[in-house]
Image (cartoon, rainbow, N blue to C red):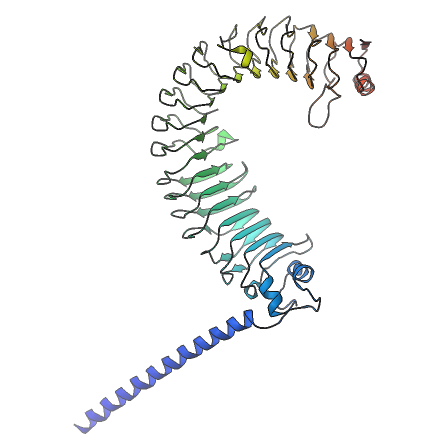
Length: 500
């Protein structure tokens, strides 16, 4: 009986001792926590390699925040550090942001470095903006409760990029020709995302259930899997692919995105698309997709439509009276009723086997026209009085009457084998003329003094491959004549220059 009482007493004593030890440990934790807080906010920190291993960080701190130039950061100086702009030289093989824990008021970080690792910003609880660019990035950690903007542009990112559960996140931009394993934004409150620059590769991208998301641009070279279900508040969705052969986008459901205004699926491999629930749609681009038909009967607000390079043969635009820009190039559309589309300003129908112009209700309003590589032999452009840009490469015309097109600034007539004379004598605003690989023998540009020799931006007149050119009639006040003559001579042309 006594042994039992003794054992019971020992057990009670042990429990009391353990409880006391736990209390002591908790007290020490609190004390240490307070000390670390005082350490970060209440003492002087030397700008040394030990505290800040990165030379670029030390340079930034000394130049911008060490006000008394004593090689140290006082508590008052530390308090003022709200942003850091660190640009590491190519000589710095690895850049670390170790030491950031001292800057408790830090709101913005802008970092460029060749290779970055151990970027730990979890102590910077006021951080709102993070911008990182360079070649290699790994080990990115941050405290996200106040983070609003994330901008990352690196060639190689090691690991997953988790941007979920960030309550104040507004904008994410990820661009470069790098490869990302996983980018997860699912369920976040992000409002705008811009991922990729046509070279970026992402194996897994998730921006599903982002209730506040309004603008999403995803332009990737390679995309493994993408989720966007539940992000129904989108106003703009851009999934353009510059390399259709690499596209993995075969199906896009926008039926619940009733606020959608802008939709770009250019280069994707979609076979079907329904926009019957997208009555607010103003811009639709399905260029280069595998679509065979498209119903636009409810999209009365549509202003820009691009169905170029699709398999569509018939198109009903009777309900789309607000269309200003229309592209039906590289299609098998032979007939098109445009009587309801009186607001068209830009019309592209090039690379179609049409022999005559589509009938536009108000050609005098058209500012851009593309009839390149069509079968038209004598296009009638007399009513196109507002025309500023004309693309007529490869047309079979033997003559071209442009006397009424007096606002013309840019004209492209490359590969025109049958056109011998190019009369631009009425175009005072002319800036650019191209007729490479053509048989043009005479060029009349007497009205303009604006056109120059071909510059780096491609504007002006280029004489390369204009082997048949023999006569140029120009304005007597044309100050660029000398450069033109040198260019023509360099191309081996024997040109007669007539000043009027």
